[in-house]
Image (cartoon, rainbow, N blue to C red; front, side, top):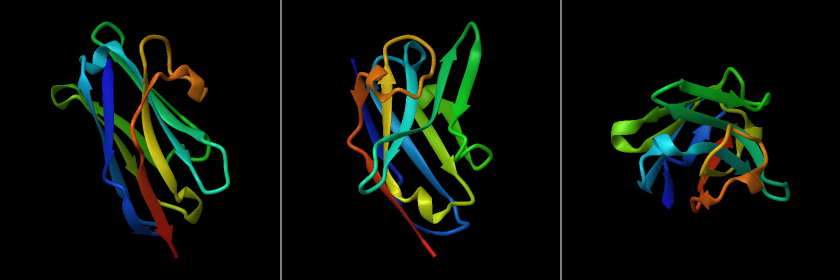
Length: 127
């Protein structure tokens, strides 16, 4: 099993940046597929992006159209940590951000495919 813990949320101005971290305790990240999701008040949880890494095929990342070109997901295997670098933040990026892991398979935007979830971290973007 893996237990994700997010951090790095907070308040940022529109156009600014924040970096979220997701530390995964338990097994090494290389055995999992990881996704970032977010949920704004009154809205359904939505896929932000995901990453899968293996020593055989390298890194594969995928992003929602709404964040493509602004957000970047990276992984530090030595620290068992996945990062979400968020640049050019917009008001509509305000949400609780979650990291989640699935045991196998490719990155998917379906949240029910992910078994392990963090508690979430609040990101608020102000004008």
